[in-house]
Length: 246
Image (cartoon, rainbow, N blue to C red; front, side, top):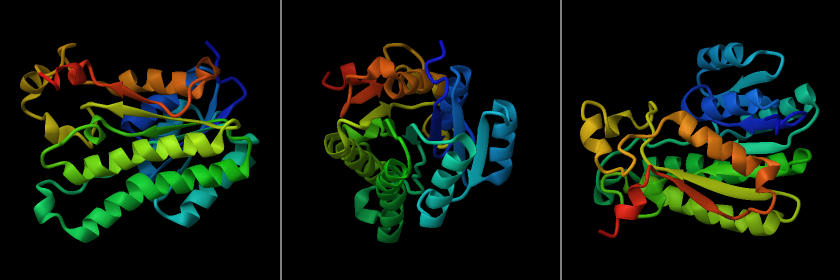
């Protein structure tokens, strides 16, 4: 398939993991991508893999306004426009109950996971021909998540932000979200390392997610195959949510 031939996507937090898997998928389907992340060396490696003819990287923190402006401008200048945005950058530097949460850390998590996603979307929509947005939420935003409580709160906020933006930006821009369960990335490693088989028993499909499991649904929601889909959050969880009520 060449669903993204001639189109341009900006993907935040894409030097590795889920973001890079989405970039690979879009490039394989004919698209061009601008990827961002904090680690310049990792971005350079990712761009070399994707191919410099249709990929470019800009290093910087997702919550930095100057970085956002530079990345969006670069997409327009390098590839002629910006059609798709994936708000994939996210952090979770804390672990433990909300009663002991450092409030400065909470503000930082909210800034990166929610405010930055809003800002990236506003900047991208203002700069070019934006058509679709995918926000990377989490299954943690749909239920209580012990020791991950504030991360889940930010992802719940991102799910609602998706609804609000889908309404405000329609019909020109579609906005949807993905809510993965545990996917094997560096961010989630502490949730399964050393006990992957045990953790996998919670999933009817009997395994944890891989970045490519998220890349396919992301490509669908960004593409014209989802032309009549907006304001939705798709759970990608190996079936874990069907057992929550039990």
